Amino acid sequence: MPDSLPSIAILGAGKLGVVLAQLALKARYPVSIAGSGSPEKIRLSMSVLAPGATVATAPQVIEQAAIVILALPLSNYHSLQPSLFTNKLVIDAMNYWWEVDGHDTELSAPTLSTSELVQAHLPSARVVKALSHMGYHHLHDEALPAGQSDRKAIAIAGNSPADVATVADLVNRLGFDPVPIGNLAAGKQLEPGHPAFGANVDAATLRSYVTEA
Image (tube, rainbow, N blue to C red; front, side, top):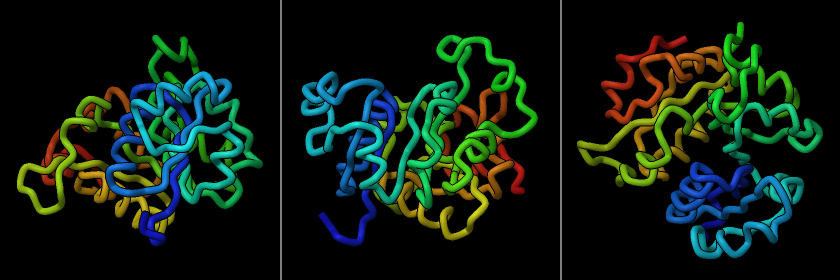
């Protein structure tokens, strides 16, 4: 694998986590993945679904990674240990679903974007919102090389231009056109109930769904 590509840890071995692992491995990133329990619970399935990914505990994969992708039920963010994420670039790919997360007043009617809540919980991390508004099945099916006219787009929101640029490069390598939309607060436009949520569209159309902050 190219030494220039940063290592990626994916927290969450569900459908989204598996698809992101598959895309990242295809793009030749070093990938590790952790589920909610013992690594042994997912080792066999990951060897079939994401061959080449390292399976380990959450602390182990976080420690070794340059980029950590959160592909968990959003309500689980409270259980993340902030000290593990010091100086880590964290991609928040989570959304609130009451069927999974339960009826959570904080998450169902937040005064901040949910990514800002994650950032507040992980104050020493650098949180960027991305890979959240497109369904996992579209992520799996729609990835295309750069330059194709029918390539789909992924929106990115973050406070650090350098981190947004890093995530934009990742999104591009995974097979999508990156569309930065502004700071982390702008990520609220990517949440359920907003036009960009569920969008499986090209970059120009996606830009028409959001207001840059």
